[in-house]
Each structure stands twice: as structure tokens, then as C-alpha cells.
Length: 255
Image 1 (cartoon, one colour):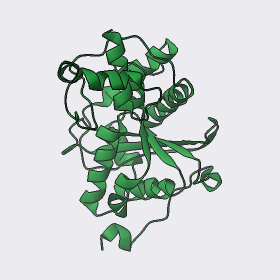
Image 2 (tube, rainbow, N blue to C red):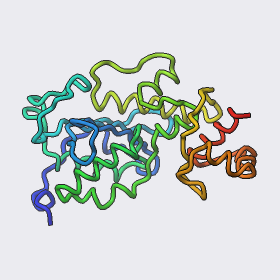
Image 3 (cartoon, one colour):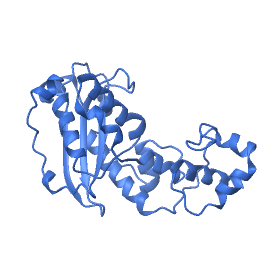
Image 4 (cartoon, helix red, strand yellow):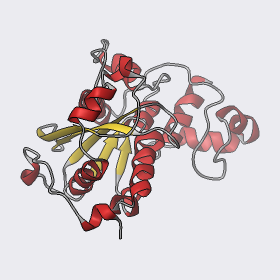
């Protein structure tokens, strides 16, 4: 058993935590790291905000991680090496909080969560033998980056997504994990509540489908190879897959 599980430290207090309903609570999560290389870079901050399905804020929490690293990208998030050394708590305790919250919420939601935050959280948990590594990947989740693509938003960074939806910037510079979790929540509720709004931005032909027999093929390749399949996609009224919705939108732009 890992040392962090033998000498488990008490959880930090999270205001509103006791009121979370596991059947309905949505948790928006963001991480700040020392870089974008998942395999080698380290988490230096985690932020969480929990909402009810109607958009009411229930709880929030964030913490710096006392990682043994030098921070060289402070211009992005405002976090310095000195801050994580003097204000940070152990990675084990941070992951304890993520694990505890995950047991009291219905979904984790993040922007580019599938490709970045989830992966780096899993790697950090496995690195120290934390129990979160065995269950985080199975937790229900939503990625607002994928949602924004389904709405025709081509430039799908969180700031670009927010600007496209609300017509203004939502960021301060630099911006911390809790700031990004808040912006992600605002984007999520808007995208969820406006399922029929499609921003008429041309999607690139090199965009790829992520499911079915044409998984991994570009939109242009599928259109050239199988007109009947494309006609079927265009005929669909309700599509659960965000990837397939994006393909349908792209096909409509080609008519």
C-alpha cells in the first residue's frame, strides 16, 4: 500500500461540500501545470466548482500543489515557484480532495478535460500510488471543448470558446485554475441550454470522426468515399455523439 494511503491526512475544509447531491451535482475542474507535456510536467494547482443542474453554485475549492519543480510559465497563471513552496499542499492531499468530491458529484466537466486534465491527473495519481488512479477514468464526464465543436466553434480553446459565445473575453491575465473552472461552467450551461445554435464557422476538412466504421478518417475522406453514409448523417434529427454532430454540421456547410 502506498504511503499516502497509510498515513492519510485530514481533508481541507470545503465550504458547501456536505450539501452536494451525488445524483445531480456537476463539478467543473481545471488544473494548472508547469507546461503542456503531460508525460513529464507537473500539476501545480487544482480548482473545483460545483453547481446544481440549474446553475446554482454549491461549493468551490482550490489549492496550490507543493511540487518539486521550477515554475517558468508564471505569465500564464500567475503562480510562482515561491508560491507553491510556501502556500502549496501535498499532491496526495489534493488528490484526496478530488477523490472525495468525485464521490459526491454526478459528472466531472472540464475544457479539454479528456485530452489534458484527466490524463495528467491520472499520471500524477499513478506516480504516487493514489487510489484515484484506479477510478478516475471511469467517472462520468463532459468535455466542453467537444461540446463547442458540436456547435460549430472552430477555435476551441477556452478563451476562444467564451468569446464566441458571449462576444467578450472572460479572462483576466494571468488566470488561475478556479477562474478557468468558472469560465468553463458558464460555457457549459450556455452550450447545454442552446442545443440548436450552430455558429457558422467553416470546419476544416482535416477534422476527423471519432466513432464508428470511419473512426480516424477525415471529414473530407468520408465525404469522398461514401456519399450514402453522408446522406444518412444529414438525415439524422437527434445525434448524441458530439463528433457525429460536428460531421453533420460540416456536411451542411458543403451543400
